[in-house]
Length: 167
Image (cartoon, rainbow, N blue to C red; front, side):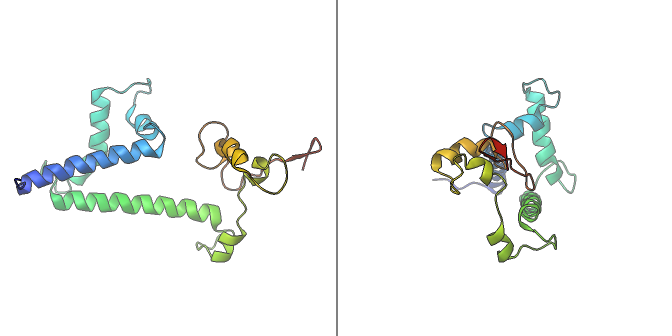
């Protein structure tokens, strides 16, 4: 079994990192919806090789911090770390938006315990105070990040019907 040279290892790392970016984007929205929407710059519902190349350059071009036309292993690692940090920051912002009831920039365990999912009342179609597996599946589109239908966001109020009246 042959060992890769420094350049070979770098090339393999770059290919792997590019694949990870594409895979993560594909997973983020079903069958690559987020990637597709970002890359389809003319919004014609199709991707050209040029659009795909531009998307890759947008994601990886910034890694060449010394602007020498090459991405070193160090630059790639730093770029990856910066992307991960940005994703963590976005994730934490969504976490705060959802759970930080008193808006103090922190989430206490009491706030997590007291959190009431905004979709619960609407998902509980038989109004028994519980959500069955069938109700959960039917409610999936209205949950944050659900596919199809209305996607409720934190703070949305659910409408709930009892005896033909909204409650």
